[in-house]
Amino acid sequence: MTAAHIKENLVNQIDRLPYDLQLRVLDFIASLSPKGVKGESLLRFKGTISANDLRQISKAIDEGCEKADINEW
Image (cartoon, rainbow, N blue to C red):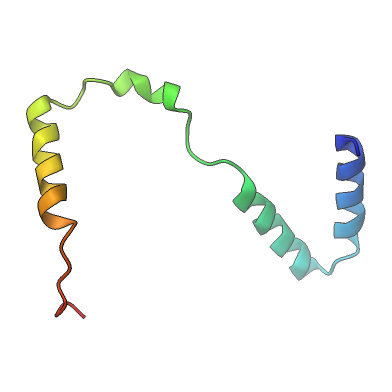
């Protein structure tokens, strides 16, 4: 099955659906699309956080994110 055939089949199937279901299909398709940016585009930020800040961030994560407060709820 070719990509053109798949697209044609999708369009035909979607055309048969009521409007509200077409919107659901559109939302579903959007959820399948990759999100975010490529890692390569983030390389320009490499080294912008100091080593000391990174240590503080790591320490805060270790101290605050791995504990459960059973009385919180």
